[in-house]
Amino acid sequence: MAEPADLSKLRIDRSRDTETRESSSGRKYFFLFGGVVVAATAIFFLFFRGKLSAVEVQTFTVTAISPGQADAVLTASGYVVAQRQAAVASKGTGRLEYLGVEEGDQVKVGQIIARLEHSDMAAALAQTKADLATAKARLPQSQADLQEAALQYERYKKLVGEQLVPRADFDAAEARYKRAVAVMTADSAMIRAAQAAVRAAEVAMEYTNIRAPFDGTVLTKNADVGEIVAPFGSASSARAAVVSIADMSSLEVEADVSESNIQRIKPGQPCEIVLDAYQDTRYPGVVGKIVPTADRAKATVLTKIKFVQIDERVLPEMSAKVTFMNKASSENISNGAKKIIVSPAAIMTRDDRKVVFVVRDNSVMETPVEIGEMVGNMLEVRTGLAEGNQVVLSPPENLQTGTKVKVSVK
Image (cartoon, rainbow, N blue to C red; front, side, top):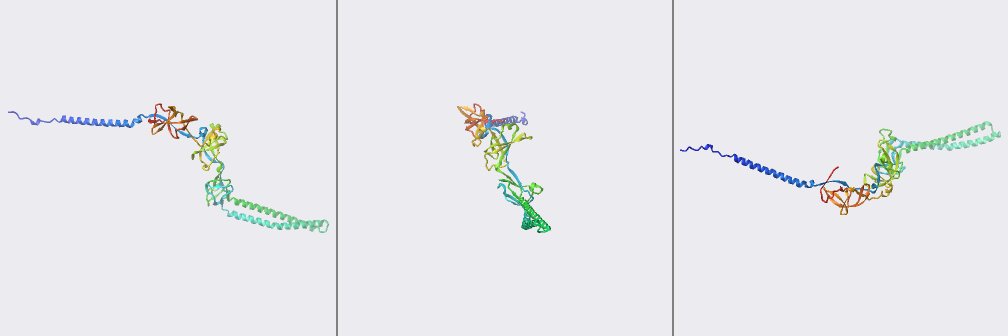
């Protein structure tokens, strides 16, 4: 009889299935990761292809200069200064009761722009005028007494010579005449003293009026009605200057020129003035004065440049740039046309044409230009470029329109 089979030893070997599944899962993840890497590489290549192939170039910014700047000898910076300017103050001390101007007002020489309280001065002036009237009123009586005494003296003088009157009567007439002369002299002196007192009171009264010293424009107002005004600010609580006035016709530019360059500047030399506030406007000027002393700290010499033409926009203390020019180019000062200039290294010849490569949106565009004369070490471009354009310096021979470029920074 056959022995029964031992079924307990029967087992299904699942280790091979597990290994097969693990191997299949590993291959799946490997291919998935490889696909991601390939896709990222393709995206990177497509996205950065243009940048990787960009040509590295140097650029020049096209600028525009005036004809005067083209022939510049030297440039300097400075400020507009009124050569005739005054801080107008009172000569007397008192409370300000009237102020008739504001900033920007035009004033004429002698115009009353402010006035101090003057009731005490007015009373003093009235008193001196009354004293003068009193002294003048006594004068006719003194004159009459003198006339009578003179006649009697002359009469007695004749009679005493003929021995018709006593000597004592003649002496009395003579003494009366001398007293009348003395009284007349004293009354005349009192009149002159009273007149002097009136003049002094009038001067003191005039001190309360603050007048414009010259024709000009009010720049600043430093005091207001009700404030105490004193000469030179003698009191800490008092105002010194009431207003500041400048003669706008005396505006000049004061610019510091280095000692090493001062020999290039001469009086009468033509200049071009550009205010920082109005950089599109050029004012013709001329060197008016070179101050005959140097600033030891800055090693500069002060020059004063007069405006040949000026308008109401020019104000004191504005900053300005001065271009000193050759006398031969002075006729170009007022010429409003600017010149477009570019570095000669940006110009190249293609098909018998002068061209430049203008950089726009990280690529270049071939642009034909018409060139003019040399302006210093730069080249004038008459057509084809505008101020602010970026052009390629020393462009490669194979550079074409649309080529991607990368601007190198040096």
